[in-house]
Image (cartoon, rainbow, N blue to C red; front, side):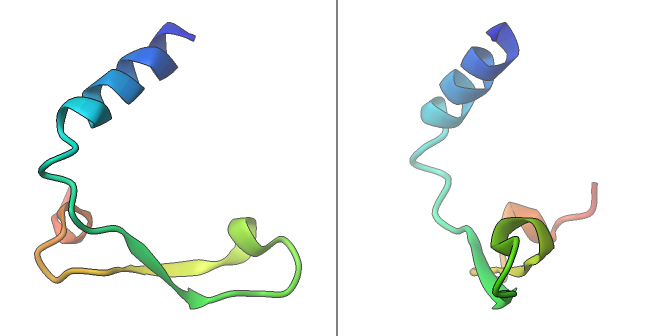
Length: 51
């Protein structure tokens, strides 16, 4: 539970910087969130940066 709370606090602290997210590119009828495919909504998203 501590990890979850720390993660929520961290995201909340960066809420002004988090301006983009993900959009569905493939959305199956069943198990939508488990089998879906996504793309970043902004080209400069942190999701596009290498790990």
